[in-house]
Image (cartoon, rainbow, N blue to C red; front, side, top):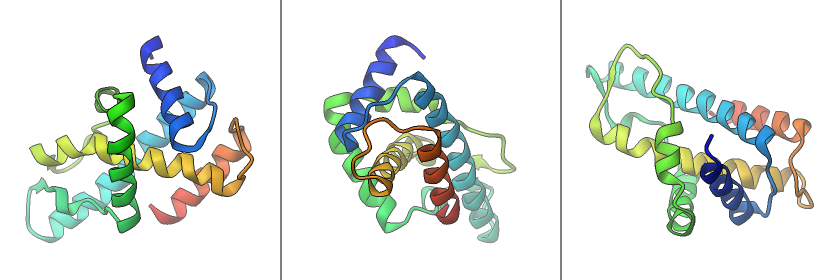
Length: 149
């Protein structure tokens, strides 16, 4: 990851939840994004198939009220940090049985941004005094997300 991207991620986590992250955290973050995007797209694919479509539309994505609110928060944070272009490049497009619609493609970085805000805030819920997430914090946060997504 380029130095500029690392700096923006560091700024993002500080702005979202007063967290200091390092390169190890960014690798864990990348793994988190890969896993959760794949999970969301699998459900979206099943929804599209159930509705007889061969393209995944935005409304097929299982975006909850809470995630929608975090997406909006990400947009506000992103105005200052400009992380969206980096998230667009980082967001995986795993092979699926169905194609992603153009609008679905365009929305993915914002969804990843919303998931990122939720992740940062999850760390603070788990430990309000946390400054630098450690392996145990990442594992706990992932277990929580796996329960819900």
